[in-house]
Length: 602
Image 1 (tube, rainbow, N blue to C red):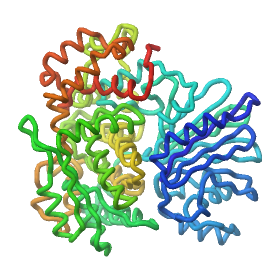
Image 2 (spheres, one colour):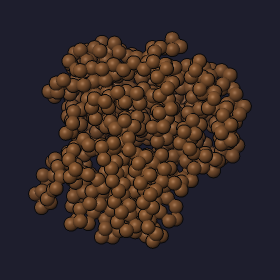
Image 3 (cartoon, one colour):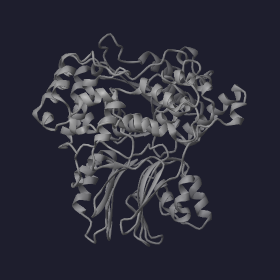
Image 4 (cartoon, rainbow, N blue to C red):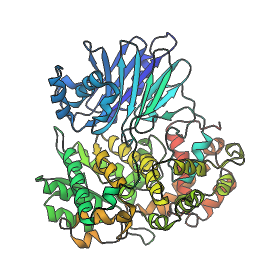
């Protein structure tokens, strides 16, 4: 796990080595163990390294292979790299290191883009082919690893974080009006390729972007997932489906044990992370380190689920650590949490993941986490109504989804932001959902909702959140529920098997016999941070200071009368998913301020 960066010149000028160096240095927390820069003509590559596989200097990056004529920077982990290495050795390749980075390099030489079909894991990388001067950027199937891009007529830059691009300089910092509406509509989700800034884009998941030496680009998608019901699975006995889900998840968990350092688990006490712990124990892992985080109660809302995580830790004999984050530390750590965000993220549990990662990183470098199970196996409350929705009625399906998922209507959005950020008659949030729901491969409303949540909303909320917060402390997080083989299986299973049982029905059945029924059947829990939902006392005052700061008002993003309404009754203005609209507003302004972004209107 690492941070990558690069610059590609189209104007015959030299690479801005100082700018590239600033980009690399900004990502030091992602890779605290080593770093380097390689410049070859019009292409510069930079890297920060977290030593997880092949901790020797032989695996340092940027990695160059003069015989192959390739240079590479790579972020992520290829879990089947040993099998691929054996295959490549039979084909005549010789290796100077023992890790997965060199396997990516030689696999690219051997198979080109077809190598992507062979990779099992999470990855974002850039490969420079010196034979034709091209650079190819790639992002993994589910967007687990990030890759941001800025471009003008002279050059293209890329990095693992948006702030790294800002550190390089020369980025258009104006607000993207389309992204702003998405941010305020989908609890901070801004789907690829957009970001909140007009001058920065991100490579979509499962995408390859080839940049020729003259700057011409070619982009294509190398993987898609179908939610068409598989007749074989539709007619299979439920017991067979349950067994297949459990077997595939167990294989995904085992694959993510590949490491030259210990692997732990972030254990919330919910079904998903508890199942990961149980399957690791079943696979023979002993002395497993597990970690949980909790907060004080507020507004009558409990702030931890320690009773459940303790139950799982006791059952499987893990070395368990609880981190309790009191209100003072929550308030104190908000600044560093926002600093760690590549994009503004309003989820209350960002600070929880940030503090948890800081403590976990003191003990180990790699953890597994349960993100993705709710989207994959229909764990959220809005899925059952969509199962009942009329088949084939596209408009009705869009309406049903927006009714439960959207934070603000078009009318409220227009009344919240300055007039220059509203395009008359253009509802970009609705348009996003309409476009996704119109794509083939997901026939029913429930299938359409599961697909957009898995491939879009998940990528730019929970997945991004985990990457940003863990990597801020040099901690690698692996997500077995986003194993592409498991994803392909779950997508083809009829939704009825997933929605049943109060959500995640088939996954709950897969857990029976391994976890207690009491844990499996308990009401769904969340990762709560009550003090950020119920803004009171010093938290409310902090938010007030942000939104009324002259610099915030000068950005010209939000209407002052709307800010005053939110401040007057913060607990009255909640989204359908019970998020604070005041917190959403303040978080964006705070993020812009902390990252030195002017945020002027486009």
